[in-house]
Image (cartoon, rainbow over all chains, first blue to last red; front, side, top):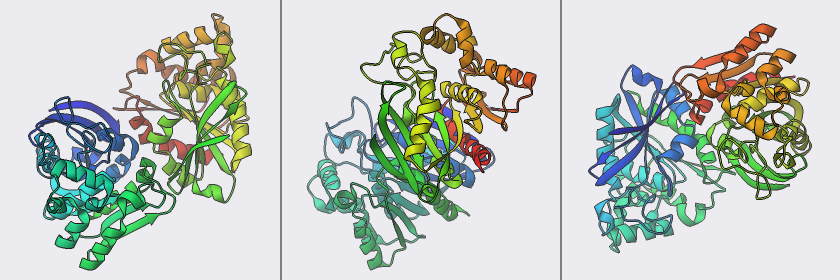
Length: 277
Length: 277
């Protein structure tokens, strides 16, 4: 593993690492924020999954989350959003290929060779974090847009591995909206039954949620709200299975990091409470 | 004037405006954060001057300052760092020309036609802010690196216009270091006497400071500390004239926005106290 950068931040360290990933069959880039408490003891970890076009940089440079992580003693882990590199398949659009991994294991070629972000985030990344840093196995997960989709899907399918989940403006029903339909048909093929394992609304209906409240913030001025996000679908599923969903519609807020920055402190407080022993 | 963007942020609005500037003989771009209290009453203003290569975007997207401005009820105003455009003189380097205005009034051609950031920040910008927004004439000023230089110079020369000044990793003695020597000889010419009006250390020695503590944070791991910043020069000047300088050397911190984000809350609290009626 290589430490790409290290910068002091709120009494701790904002690092970026690169290491060889088996899941991705290539190198993975990951932002890791170690709050000051990491000098003394093992800490719980909040995984953050970013949205379309993002790398690990967006969250670590724009969300202002380190302040709250330092307050609560939580490690923040923010991976890049897809495999990268010349040898990795790509598409000439922002919502497919590099920067648009959708946190799934692709089954179609040429994607299947590297696009295994689901395995990477669920298994390999926590294993790497917990063996290289003062990190406990108490895990929470959150994300934005495509990353909100990833966080919900991963938490719902791995309820023994995550104690808490939240999301900002997530794609809650990718099988029903253009971003998801394009990505899933490309990465998974036309068998729509296989898509259900990556659809948070379908998963919540099927599996429920055994932990505390699922916190979701959604801006009402988000340009993608009606076409791609449709949080009411998840609300209906939660109501049907009596799952504890706390969906907050935030007037005036759009899809940007100004929205995330405004509420990420409350999300980190929410996760920190769930991550306490 | 044109509103380039408006985004909800911490209960207020992060806006960017563009308007025709007389000082710059062209358009000026300015970030304006209006905290929620601006709906009710006139608020004091903190002006932020950014460093080399920056536009108005760096501070508004990376510093996380809006949270503190919303807590304290302070408007944040962050102008671009120079005149811009095809008709504006430029240089093929990062530390001269567009993005490197050094907050002075150039006297040499071709720079003198547009490079009048001193007049812009001291006169035109506050006039524009106070006539278009719920802004009082209670002003504070801060900045980073080249912008820390600008904030100190502007506050020291206009002590009746600013109640408070602070800086992050400022160029405190530009007449003594390479960045300043290049910029001043280019923009002002070889008469070094004329440079003294833009040197914070010389100005503090000459004029003193009539208000409360000048707060300066400087990272000890800053790559530019010894070559370009040299805060001990300002400390010596402050000691000689008995000026209230609070210079904090911060172990581990570098020159980046992670450093600014870590301490900007304390700077805003410092200014908010000085700006109270």
